[in-house]
Image 1 (cartoon, rainbow, N blue to C red):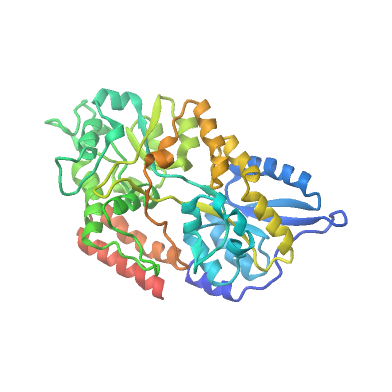
Image 2 (tube, rainbow, N blue to C red):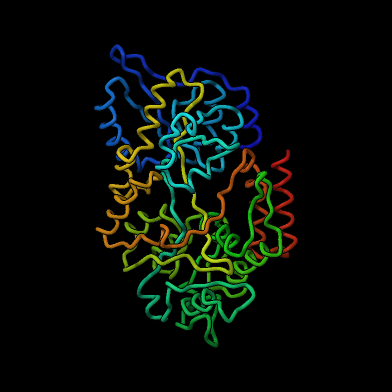
Length: 434
């Protein structure tokens, strides 16, 4: 992943991006577009078929690179002058390219389109008061997938879940997770004789999952993960309460899969849910297709649990960034303008592949899932409006890698909570400043 070395490499990048125009008819320019998710390629191809009909002097060529390799090879391509004309970026990696001067300022170039894009995505990719990419897709708010039969049997109201680290009289999330967790003998975690060593059904998916879990707990307890200067600030009393609540569910209450499983497998909780071994699965729209295709039982979507400061969710988006070194600047802007338009973004939502960050194109996404009987409103503003900024900074990935083994120990309760969080924060900040 992109770290300190890559950021330095970017600063020395060349200026001859990958642009295979050879073989084109006279007057036709190829604009290359790099992305990591092959599931959106059919929608993008449909979109750009229409774009090419309207713009016969431009053809768009896609380069799909798996996410596991994406941010290893991209900085090398940029440094070698071989980067595509347009490429996807996420918030954790974008700042390095911004600071290296490698991206087109779309806030200036496409200022008239800015109001068409999801405000959270615009905020996420605004750095130094300027916007550095066209918001392409957004994950929407985090919500809770649930197994209808399990919830009904336990008498849990999934639309009114609330967590509170101090006032247990108003906390409904932990009691619900207890009633939804069963051992091999059929006893639930709130019954005498419950055996935490023979759990066959877990209630909830507390885990070291930044986007789906602990980021939102931090925000809904009034804590933060980072400061505006990209340093970390989660080892605070409010942060300790949020992390402590999750660790308690994992280590003491045993109502969620163990850290030994979830620390090493980010898909473990999702797979448990799909196998009918987990009742409540907190996640985002990025798992909607997985659940829809993989669950062989009746399921639904409920709102994110409310915390002491309300429903606060991270809303993470992906941008299509324009390569500032491309010799096809005018053509790149036309491609970006199309991506940022309702017509260009519509195919993404029309087949339910991804939630477009172009707000006028989102209705098609919700309509697709409504036709399939899925209520997706909780991923939108119906699920609340409070947000916590997505992780950011040119050194974020390096810091995240450095903090990961320490946070693994925190979630496994292998170290004292306060000391573990301070250690992780110190190591992360050392990486940011290094």
